[in-house]
Length: 151
DNA sequence: GCCAACGTTGGC
DNA sequence: GCCAACGTTGGC
Figure 1 (cartoon, rainbow, N blue to C red):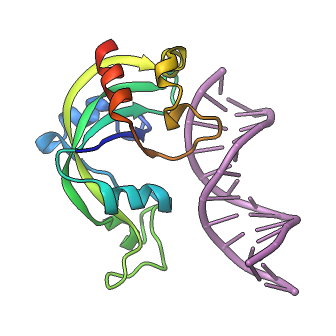
Figure 2 (figure 1 turned 180 degrees about the vertical axis):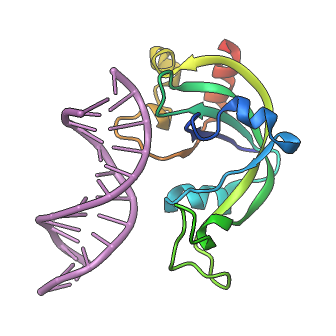
């Protein structure tokens, strides 16, 4: 079982939105970065644990816990010409983008990025590196456990 | 709104 | 396959 951190803009899907979805589950559609796609397609397994991170918002930080509940499958929005995630180069025979489904586990207190930065134990987290723009990053078990202890 | 960092695109 | 231009991300 692996640990991940997944960013979402709360104006798009917040942790509260996730909690009120049918089955408390959402498809993690719209990822258009190959590295992030590869994490979902090649490495994520059902049961993997996820920090749900609010980004691009007044209070960025970890807002809750989720888990992977469905293996990666083709992202439907790549085929939808009305979607902003439409990709004309993708075909159903040869899909380019994939997503997993993620299920709500619980809300946590908001652990802000500033607080995360204050812990030397977490200095290696991808999310804290300058210029990091990956929306999905692996989390070391030690880092995961450390955060769980201060949450 | 600014801007640093970085990924992608496309001409050559 | 290089690399400049461009677009996007995301904290501040």
